[in-house]
Image (cartoon, rainbow, N blue to C red; front, side, top):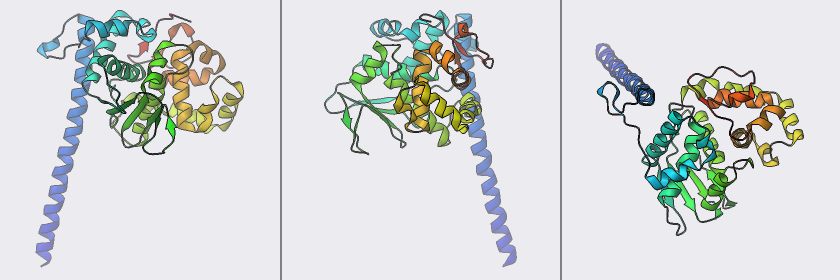
Length: 299
């Protein structure tokens, strides 16, 4: 009897070890493949080829009409030509990955899909992993809507179960005024990014490692009181720490010079977390590793 139990235990341990081996191998191969795709994408930009090492990782292109709309976006105009090609490719690729649904009779057009994805890629452009794990379904409403969860009226919402909701007119308005510190797309995708991080989803290793830069700022409650008193961030930012991060991200992209002047520690932390920077501000921020350097089109 004892021998039988020992045999069973040995078999169970063997099965467990085999499962752990294959799970670890799968994760390792997946990460290696993702890095390979990024390397191929970068090589395509630098070398001007679409199939580096005979591997088909072509840069994707939007339709001419969507490309025209993309070129009108202020963020896109701040990128170097090679980075513009990468941005367009990532937007096109994410349009094929996200499920974007119209609600309450709203018909979703390709331009709507492109702008939803452009907001996401703008936030994650400094990362290799630019599509947020677990948040691939988007609902668009024709205006402010009653949340299916809170039953309150919202312009945007990020649900922990993986859906991102937008009022389409309010999402579109974020692209029309690039300096008002209001960008609904950036705001809700920032929520999704932070939820993915804290729910142990697969996020880019830059965020995984560097988010402590933001956590350290929030650990000092004096920083929060000082930010609130300064009035640079809108009052809604201080509802909770998640809203504070989302509102700070909006302001980082829309008025970086003002943020760097009023709250240099906040600006430096977001540079490090997002892997994006406006070099002309010349702040003492950590050196970016293959980061996104934006041109000063309005500073």
